[in-house]
Length: 172
Image 1 (cartoon, rainbow, N blue to C red):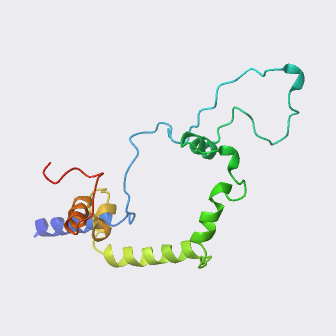
Image 2: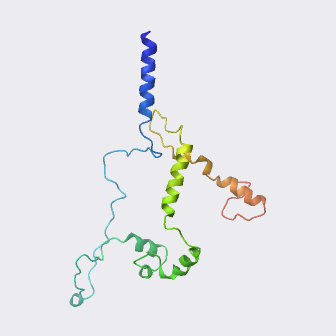
Image 3: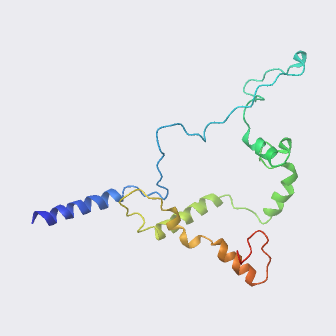
């Protein structure tokens, strides 16, 4: 009589412990070390061409050695970092593209609506994914029906006669 009660108690304890973390991404960091993505290296110090014409210091202003990831990314991709609009972070050369893409209007609460729709979807889809005995990443499981198989899509495109030069040939 004691054995079935013990098994029942352990089963209930495992089920309750498994339901404690409702997140989709249940990945633990490997240790207590620093977060390598939060560290931005500074640029090397350079000597000015003429010490007589140094710019005046600006309190709270930028420094030549301070990292600027947005401008550095634009420069690395062949763009002009000076063309960035400081208010929108959209290059002035792309302003017409942004205007054309938003010509029908953009609701101000788009992010909130998408978040609410995704929460409702995850609640419907993830009812049984909350039950777990061990920490597992459930993201791919919840969004499985929304994923696209690139090989299947390539074959479908080839089936209707579209060229797919970036994909390997069908016989490889």
